[in-house]
Amino acid sequence: MNIPFRREDALVPGEVETIAPGVRRIICDNPSAFTFRGTNTYLIGTGSSVAVLDPGPVDEAHLAAILAATSGETITQIVVSHTHRDHSPGVQPLKKITGATTYGHGPHVTPGEGGDHSFIPEIRLADGETADIGGRPLTALFTPGHCGNHLCFALDGTGILFSADHVMAWSTSVVSPPDGNMRTYMRSIAKLRAREGIDTLYLPGHGPRLPDPMPFLDGLAAHRQKREARIVAALREHGPSTVEALVGPVYGPLDPKLIAAAGRSMLAQLIMLEEEGAASRDGDIWKLD
Image 1 (cartoon, one colour):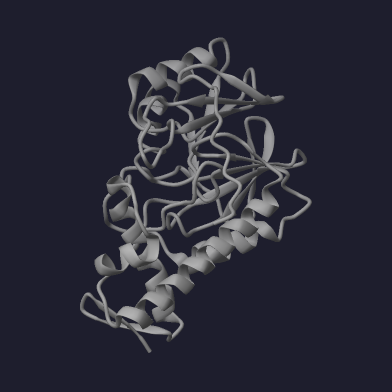
Image 2 (tube, one colour):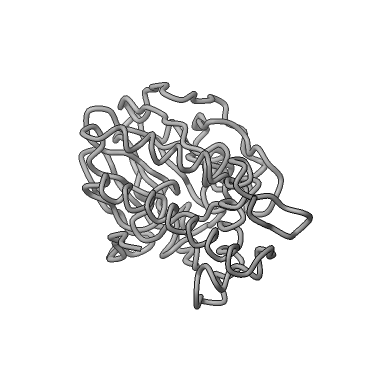
C-alpha cells in the first residue's frame, strides 16, 4: 500500500552497531514473522552512565552480548518501551546483575497473550516527561495503540526518536485487541506526525533505522484508512460476517502464519468503526449500520 518499507539490515545478532555518539544497537537472535530479525536493544550513553532500552526476552546469549558491549562501563538504568514478551522480560536478569533502576510507563494493562505481566517500573514516565537517561535528556512520548502502555522516546536535541514497535521500517505494527487499539494507534501516529522537523531519524524495536520518517507516517495512516475502506466494502458485498470470513476478501492471499494476526488487526478496525457508530456486532457477526 505504497509504504516505503526498508528491510536491509546487515547487523549480526550479538554484534554492536554505533548509530550516533552515545547510541549503540544490539539485535537479539529471536527472529520470527513478527519480530523480523530480532528485537533491537539500544545502549544510550557511555562510561559511568549507560542505559539499556528494551533488553528483549530472557535470552542468555543476548544478555551476554549486552554485558560484553558495556564491559568496563556501568549500566545504571533499564528503560522499557512496552511490555510485550519480546521486549521487557530481559529486564529481570539484567537488573539482577547490574542493580540498574527500571523505567517505563507502567505495568501491562490488559490480559492476553504476548503480555509481560511481571514488569513494573520503579520509575514511571508520563507523557512528555524528560528524564536523564544515560547522561542524556530523553523525553517519553505516550503512544498507545500497538500496546496499551507503549512509549516512544525522543533523544532531545539529536533528531533521534526511539520508535519501538509503534513505527517500524520493515513492516506495519500488529494492533491486536484488547491490548491493541486502532483508535489510539491512529492518534499516536498523528501525534508523531505533528513533530515534523523535530524527529528526523527513527530507531525502531525491530529492523533497520528509518530516516525521513514523516512520509512513512503518512503511508502508515493511509494504509489503515484503505484497510478500513476495504472492510466496509467487504461487509457491503458479503453482508453480516465474522472476522474470519472477512480476512480473505479484505487481505487477499496471505502467508498462513499471518492470517491470525491479520484477523486481530481487522478486529481492531471493526471496533473503531463500532465506536464511530458505523458498524455493530451480534456475537461474532459484524454488520454495517
